[in-house]
Image (cartoon, rainbow, N blue to C red; front, side):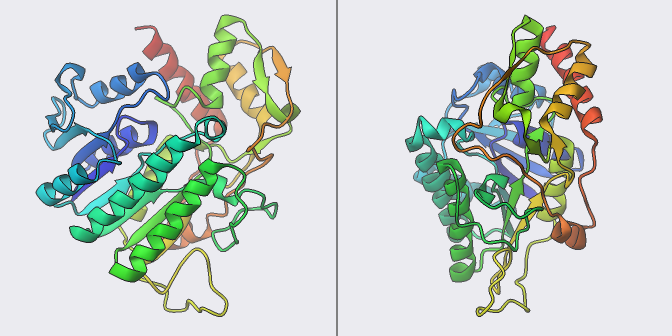
Length: 350
């Protein structure tokens, strides 16, 4: 199969490209390598995949020096004409759209970035899939779409009309847009709601990275909602396994779907939404404890109130994922945090 993976300089995209390449698929990676966080980490991921930094030129495919069937192009999803040219030339079987402007808190500061990347950029992906049909479009949604919902665990059959950040609203918009194109043009589309992903090569704006950086400097870590937070922390390897399993089975439409009692997670159209989470929420203080154990350092803690746009708990119902793919994420937090710390020490010792 020939895959386009957008966001391959990013955390999940990097790991997904490697897994697909290791099993023999052909991958074209795509990323704009923006400076939302340290670009050296993004280039480091690419170099780990055999994409030499000095060879990267805008809009030109670069061949990997490590993988025969991997090439990468630096471009932006907002560049519709280039997207169309790329799709016309490469004729992808499957598209996995992981490129997005990430981060709940940053959406309070720079909302325009979310509209350009997550709305306009996603529209261009849909238009390209319409013009040059693919077997399956898989795209990243987010657990943040559950917003003000308090019924646990979060189910894809739940209504998600009360987002608490523009980031969450943009991800909900992606799901609505994908359904429209599935209905109108028959594009098989699957949205994946990821739950608090962590692990090696993770983003430096995420809690685990921020915590370890502060702890190694002897500085206090910021603990929001006074530590009364629960997250469905999900190891990146589990996320990637879930993506691959879902990508291998395009939705065909739910014959039992009814308009008088509509299931938000499926459709008569070839459209589906899944949660991918560990389905075992962990207290934030236990997560910090796992990091303290792995580092051998006790953290000084600065207790703070809940931040705007944040939610106190997430918890994934993965019943649909288990039923349809036979898979459930299960890496324990202690194990996943230990792997992150091992990578962090090795990477930054260089």
